[in-house]
Length: 291
Ligand code: FAD
Figure 1 (tube, rainbow, N blue to C red):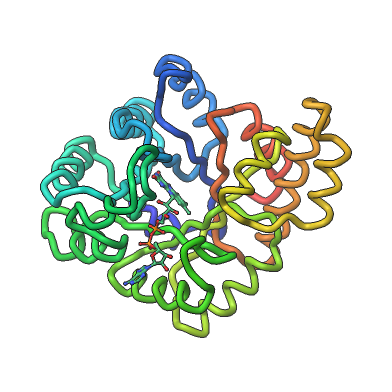
Figure 2 (tube, rainbow, N blue to C red):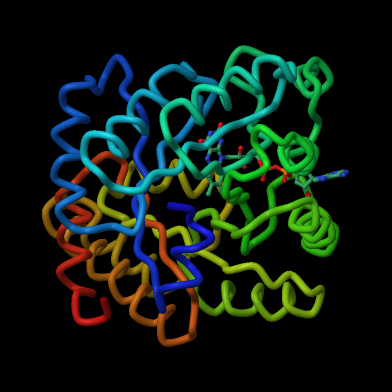
């Protein structure tokens, strides 16, 4: 089923993100994680693609497993940086052959060990070009297409310019938007107000990262440059050295964030599980009364 239709039908959606198997996370282990995740009845699960320049394999295989064996809706991420149209078309052909209806169309970043020259090497410079191309290709135009957005601005731009580029991206054929993680709901709501002023009216799905490991989150925050509200800073300061307490506090923080976002009328939340079913389980338990 298309995510566009799920979003139209439901008051709120709750979905999960996983990453495909790699040398530290086997396919077997991930299949166990997904088997558990589907029990929490997500509206869909998304599978990342080549993030951080790592291997691009495994995305379709895992998405296909979730869709065709576990009978749960999926979305595959797809980055276009440095890619030729023929490579993108081959990937999408496989997407269609595996009965997958949803794509998160992304530009991607410079992979580790490469330089910015990669932006000029492929057939696409920005995600909006990939999206226009998909919409004009009759083989793929029926896919439900999502794109990324940054409530606190993409790291390569200032907020106004980034918002205009987002408007252009949405107008190229986007059905819904999924955000980068953020920890301050006020900033998200402010972003929504600004987006509405530019007639960006597609559903916004909020990316929620449970802060369960202080060291890991410090690095992620450094890379994503998202701001940390005082309340979260204090939790990390107090519980960061105690893994069990940090995990519990992080789960509570993420759960409260979701409850508040739904109260603000945000359409969906997408939980970055980092392939940890246990964290997703506890958040789902905390927000069960809303589903
Ligand atoms: P774009 O929308 O192309 O924007 C990139 C930058 O270019 C922005 O600064 C924008 O303002 C600017 N821009 C856009 N159009 C123009 C224009 N016409 N002229 C000048 N500047 C322009 N990465 C992965 O590798 N794999 C994944 O699976 C993955 N999943 C993600 C999921 C989510 C929800 C999010 C938020 C990000 C994900 N990423 C992933 C990271 C993403 O690839 C990077 O953040 C990347 O830097 C930007 O991708 P984009 O699709 O937002 O790019």
